[in-house]
Amino acid sequence: MKDFIKKGKTFLYTLWKPTEKWSDEALSGTIESTRFVVLDTETTGFDYSKDRILCIGAIVLQNNSIAIPDSFEVFIQQEHYNGTSAKIHGILKDCVIDRPNELEALQMFLAFLGDAIIIAHHTIFDLTMINKALERNGLPLLKNKTLDTASLYKKTILISNLIERKDTYTLDELADKFDISKKDRHTALGDAYITAIAFLKIISKLKAEKAITLKQLFK
Image 1 (cartoon, rainbow, N blue to C red):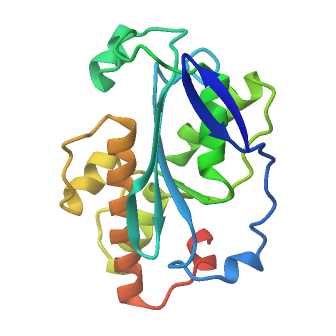
Image 2: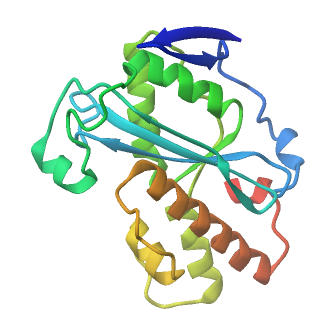
């Protein structure tokens, strides 16, 4: 382990390298025994080049259980401020005084993530924002396996033979369909929690139809 000090606080992180752990053979394990990290980011906007991550929230999911004590949340020093997006996520420029910079926040997040499988809603956005930040700071891009709850939810639609299908589903729609509280919606950790519950509900629906393996989730 290595440490660094930020305004009197010491953070620990491991030196991180991209993992190649998740081969097809490794995916022969069970869904229950696998360590998933469910994540969400709050950002200044949707432009991958110009906008920046304001907060990363993540929760560990394993053995069909959400490990609330093993959660992660970091607010990052703001280089940019967007009043329009601030009305949605509520993160003001000075609302958290003692924030790590982008590099420090990424190092903390990578130590938490390890080689877990990443789950997010509309994964491409969060992963691209994180990878852009990694690239800016001279760090390797993520190579973790990823799952998207928006895509997984479509599988439950297919097996239920519902006529009404859409190209994509919002996190609000999944929360409504699965009766999940939206109390902390539009906070990184709150949205990660909603996504984690939605994932468990989706897995339950898929298993009710037939036995499903970890490997099949990626097909």
